[in-house]
Length: 261
Image (tube, rainbow, N blue to C red; front, side, top):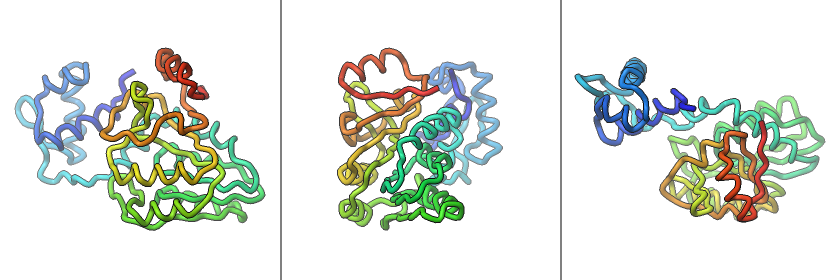
């Protein structure tokens, strides 16, 4: 099913990268009518992301290149992310130490954490740390830790050697990781940043158990760099939108996938 918000996000990225595009080109890329594309461009122009011209659109002079991707991603597949995070929260036990990596599904995981006797949480995500702080006002035995590092503006996460060194020095029971994309052909999770990749790898290495939280759309999403094999994860939790073929291939390769709906 085509998701208008996701399509508009991709249109915005494409025009920001290329500088311009025609209505007919966008209609061919996204397999929708030209009328639909014109409506998308109308909305994006109102939001200040582009300027409509005859037959297409160009980058707006007021477009902010550093508009946080996080703020866009959190709007997408909200129902799927919620049911995944509800399932993931069941894996958290009393006195666990866990890592909630950057990602909007991990952000939702915090919302669905149940009150337990004691819990220590580490994160590299500024929005997740803020949600954890709000949670700590209800749960007194919740200890929150955030790494240092450089702020990656688009994802609102901490990256770089300081973040990597931080996670190299800790030991956690479980990590919850949300990828940018998943390549079922390469059997790897994907990212668009090598600095993000370094942090994710250090998190995986310091955790006794690693759980991948991924809505089904991530299995169709490409990114520049392969981070780590899917076999690095003890479990993948996804929604019922995952295709039967992807599910078959993953399980054939002994990848444990839990499907929730």
